[in-house]
Length: 80
Image 1 (cartoon, rainbow, N blue to C red):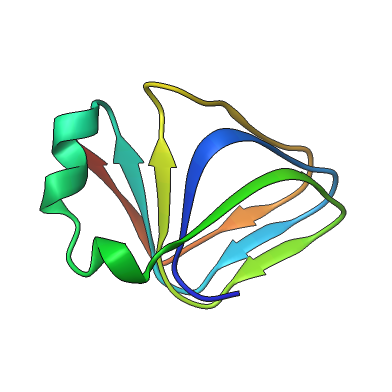
Image 2 (image 1 turned 30 degrees about the vertical axis):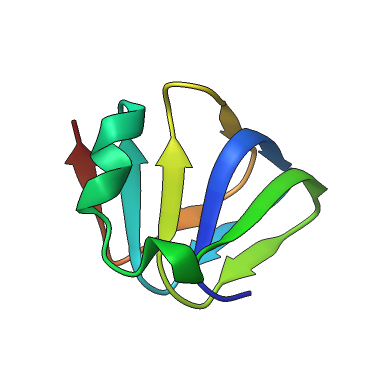
């Protein structure tokens, strides 16, 4: 899956692998700090395993994410 954005709840029963950066977005205005945001696809729902081949934006101000297994990425950035 390419660059993705979570604006609704996401549950991963096992592992979430992100080959890029995880952006923790604390408010809607902070989304403006993400380059090429229009290239991100929306994801939500339930997955057994999920691999994002790119960056992941988590809109912390309006959703929750639950990963029961391993969470891997090259790093996290908090945007506020």
